Length: 295
Image 1 (cartoon, one colour):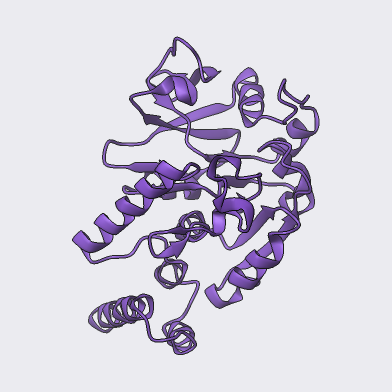
Image 2 (cartoon, helix red, strand yellow):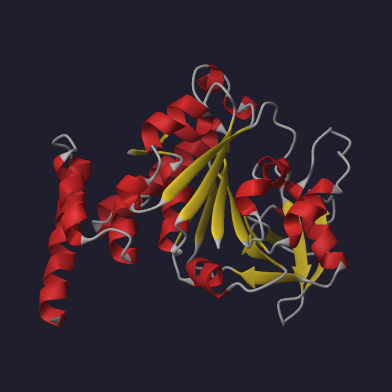
């Protein structure tokens, strides 16, 4: 499984913040927004990750993330000259995806809680898997209707009368067919290659599965000023209450075994004195003690 993060788009909903910076580089509490989807992919065991961004923002992402080797992963970058839809990411990264499978994540979506998402990443085999999240206002989202076996029945984009209270969050799992499907898409009325049309094609083929996210799971879309503030407040609350940090690729890489304890310690030495480093140091001590007990 490979991972693909879409960090392009004009960021118009966050104007004027995005006049000088990609929205995926804006802070969500104490970390850049891009750290959160990146950490989910690492926690799901994905080591090969592609990032799609605009030409002006790519150098900033490269400066922040590098080639990923510091976390024991590989990051490749793909230029999106114009924001022509989510599904365009598959065309831009077709050589990277090759024979699949691939997980696509939107760079402004945050996920926290439970093991449904990481488990789906590791257990995925074929077809397509999308997720269902119960919301109070499904008419504002893409909506999925599904049966008790997790088979999708219908997909609607911001319907006036939703058939289901379940929205589709910004994470999607696809097999090798996704590039060919994306190549056959026609632009929508707004001139974009829509991810919903990709999902509809898998639905037509009888290959679209739905994983329902539990009540204890949190999904946040940080694409507007108010939702960005809410996401930051949520992260701050969890971190303060539980004494953990969300969206730390270093921690995820260490716990996944992508980094050895020695490599993790060397990584910390390169960081300035700050709360982030102090937290990661405590994680290293915790894991080191656990290794000593297991031995």
